[in-house]
Image 1 (cartoon, rainbow, N blue to C red):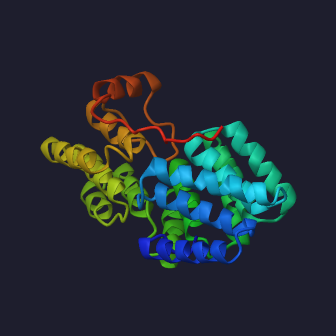
Image 2 (image 1 turned 180 degrees about the vertical axis):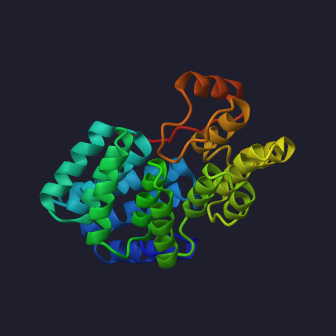
Length: 289
């Protein structure tokens, strides 16, 4: 799953996971694998976010119910709690359980790196991402996250080198061109940033990036048009992700990185209050506890 993030790879992986579950419905790791696939498809925009993570949660919980000692089941559950629920304590608890069951798994250092990002410790996250790529040197998304943290800490040259490794492993890896565009913006290379943003494979990020660069270029009409298209295409499945672009255009200030400090909370709330009702992401229809 870390080797390629385009829809064709997801579809193949999902088909294989479905086949494995049909062949052996009691095989916990197959349920955990399908959970990871659904979560990835939801995060990358290949299915409805709420529905995707709901199915991911159901499969992770099924894996754990079938085998309470399934490390993969707990890794999948940690992925959902950290990436969708924003339940840091619950995510860390699931992660610790998984790591205890399967020491040395690169997923453990990867999720711990994500927690360090959440806690505002990018330097610690960088150390953990470097451990992760040492354990799994073919993980394209891991190189992306490492490159993003290097960007956040202002290490632009090293960030570009690492981000290129992500593209070498997976030319369709989402988010990479967006971060490279942000680096170019930070360096004042606006026209190059626009070209970079237009190569982004993730549609909502491509539109977000275009809106940011057009605003930086003083082309407010083009920026507003990109935001309008972004809302029209992704207002129901990426509202949280759309907010930075709207804040950049309406509240001004520095464009936030993917895991950076972003805008001050008061300004962020002000910008969101202006658009609340125009963009709303429905809560997942889950009956799970």
